[in-house]
Image 1 (cartoon, rainbow, N blue to C red):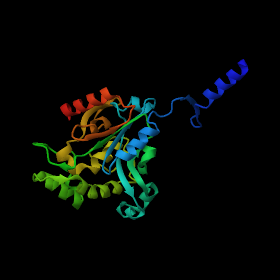
Image 2 (tube, helix red, strand yellow):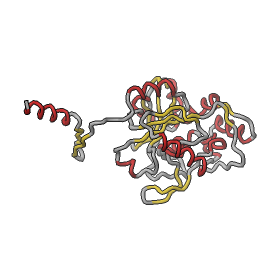
Image 3 (tube, rainbow, N blue to C red):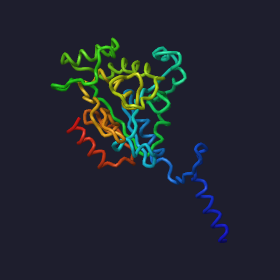
Image 4 (spheres, one colour):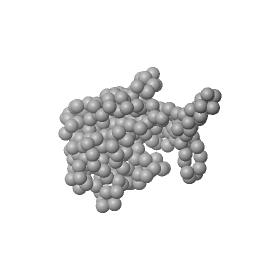
Length: 270
């Protein structure tokens, strides 16, 4: 009887051990991801094309180095078909292109790539941020990260409308932003987090680049932050939790007090 209990206990622990072959080490993780199936079903029903997704982990090493609560961001594209390959910047980008009903584009160590929303939801906490249906430029705002050469014709039309004081309908603007997002697929990751150019892209640089024509509304340019042991001009995932964007959904595992505090802090500091 005792032997059976010991064996059952051992098998229970054994099933929660993860093995990493190189470099070789073991990790005991009985909890798995804290965003569960019911959360994912909610997110699938709530999310809309053009939404910004932010997520975080409780036990990953990078979370201790990336400043703030959230450690990663992505952009929800919605349905992507094979015909959308025409928006890629090169043939080489096709290796990172993927079709599906609910696709996300984001940037990690392997560069800018696409994956299903369900895959993106494998995390410990997550939130969905959304632009309002109609956007107007904020008063006396300076668009810090804009460069005229970075705009497509569609982006220029969006920016000029905001600059002229005319409202922009987000659903219409997104038609251009969707193309911009796909044109970044395949770009390498920016390990330097250099917001002065967009040849390489970190996760928040990708979001910043895609929505740069809306900066007169969202004001989400890079700010000086302590990053690792240095101070750099960056846009952190936490900064995307701005009251300028609607908090459309958050997983049950999100710390609600931290989220409320973040939105207040971003409102004060930008």
